[in-house]
Amino acid sequence: EDRGVAERNGYYGLTEREVLASREKYGANALKKRKRKGFFRQYLSSFSDPIIRILLIALAINLLFFFKSRNVTETVGIAVAVFLSTFVSTLSEYGSESAFERLMEQSENATCRVRRGRKTLTVKTSELVVGDILLLEAGERVPADGTLLSG
Image (cartoon, rainbow, N blue to C red; front, side, top):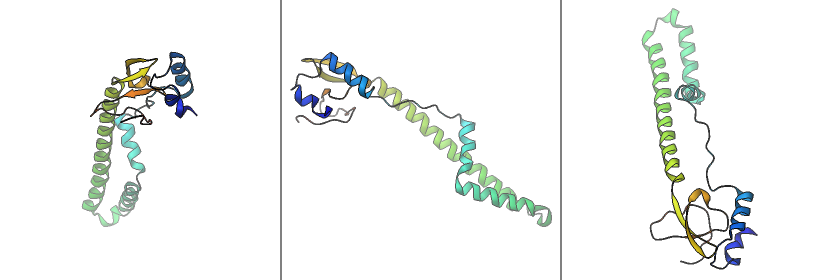
């Protein structure tokens, strides 16, 4: 099993050939970027929320009986509730996605120290591979899943 690569290599780290083989087999240590929806498209998708659908049904029923009852306040109130609810939730979600994208950009540029071929190297976290030996210090983030060899 590949999990034992670090133990088999002692504390010398992977050879360049093992790094290439691991990267070929498992890919890069990076999240795949997904295409982001535009604000308007995200706004339209917020109408799929069950509560919004119920409000839209209530609005449609209210509009059907509007000519009979002439209750403008209730009809406008429901319409405003639908608009505000969808707009605020879209704004919040869009802002969260923007913050997540900025965080991802920062993590793409992050580096860490690894032991490879008896040398200590500084590499981007996206260049880590299965079997790498990470050299961490107190307070550093662990940029990948792994097995603790010593602590």
